[in-house]
Image (tube, rainbow, N blue to C red; front, side):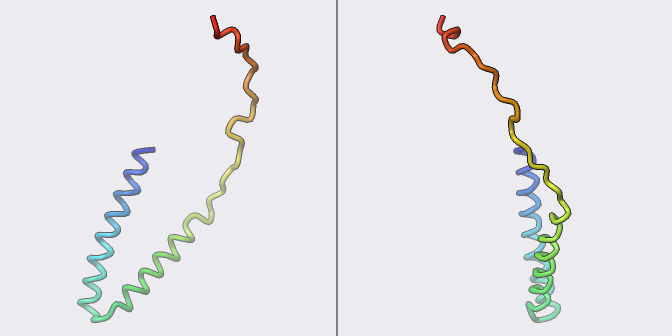
Amino acid sequence: MATLYGIVFFSHQLGSFVGVYLGGVLYDISGSYTMVWWIGIAVGVFSSLIPLPVKEEFRLANPEPFPPHDCNAQMG
């Protein structure tokens, strides 16, 4: 789980760096942030559509009951 968190955090930081840099480059080229806003909106819509085809299977954490045990057996 920690590795997964590290990968997600790293990709988030990498995307933040690239996004800010490219936003500045696009502003320098066009003189406006309009294109940057539209790209940001497109990325947001795309990101919200990615998980739609995922089918989650819901199940109980432990469907079988615990076997009964004798509490007095542990008290030597």
